Image (cartoon, rainbow, N blue to C red; front, side, top):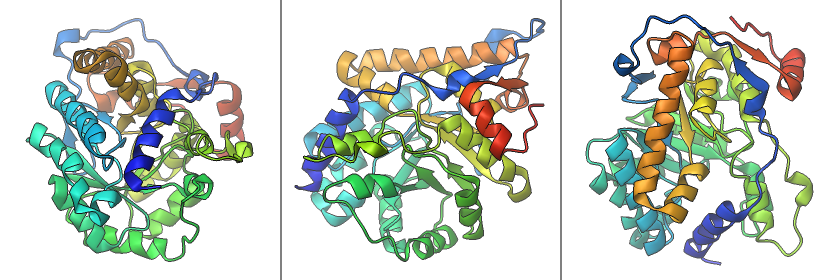
Length: 347
């Protein structure tokens, strides 16, 4: 099967597969503060994400590209919406365009539509330094994502099986790239041990990419005649993975991003409270775009921004940084995880 056909398969299955009924963000409660002296209209969402300054902590996370005209159209509309709402955007893996230059336009469109926005390029962990530089230049990116997707590759019928040498490649890119390098998971979360290893390679930006959103085990299993269904629930849910990362944040000046299963602005606020500086949303936004169109997508993003500001008001937080210091409680499986894995301080 061609890469382009596989990209379209991923979109179709990502929109149609069943999501988990239980979302681990429901295990996290932000403590409500009744008294506030703030003016809602004067709150701002500016976020400092390491070297990057974003007008909002929300960004459109990596989705697609490299699937011909259909993926070009999706990326164009996502880029337009990101520009209209002032949020960042990541493109899907650019390896397809690096190997087939005819697919470049499906990625280049995002910079054409969003001249002044913050854009993240994207390559897999198999990418060389040359590949990474090509991806960055292709969309004049402000940062680069390197995605980790070992289980997806193992389930994917045509996926990679040899992961030798990938740590060395990540290290080379981190040391030589001219933009911040974000290493991200694609829905299986990151453990403290994995993050520690990445830190040793020089990585200082982590997107935990936890379980809870688009489930690539299910997506790839839908493409198999005999699925590996036993792996459909594999991985670390996003709140738990954020708690894992937070243990290393201060010691190593780590910049944490959160993604995976974020349904709305309140979930986004919870990622900030759990240690993230910014949060990415993908499947939720793609579904709105495909089913309801561009205008509805812009409206949805603005709604999420308002929800986030409402949480700021309800925690007496003047800024996104203040929100990150809010008190929270944990319940259910996330509490059990924290008790076994985390030296927890909930402020």
